[in-house]
Length: 121
Image 1 (cartoon, rainbow, N blue to C red):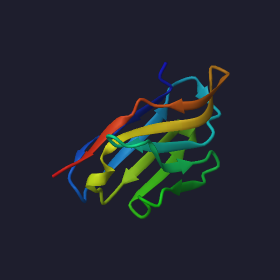
Image 2: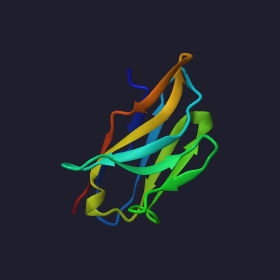
Image 3: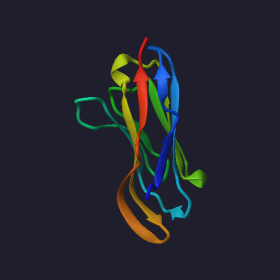
């Protein structure tokens, strides 16, 4: 079953902004570090940003100064704000959780289904 659901992808022009959300479905608790990854066509999946349960965040150097990650634990949700988008930001963006409890059962290495972000003029 799908435990993490991404939303907010779409088409945006270079220099534009887009926000992504990732929400855990019901009956989920105790989510550890969450992250955003992306995978461009023909490339390996890469880490974009992370947010720990205690609120420590980090972004990859490739998006530093343009992207920011935030997390609302009460909503089991993370967000990715993407500004000054470039052609090379085009990718499928995936949400990830290191561990979570679903109906009391521990799940590790949990992925969302991904959302497409396309930067094009």
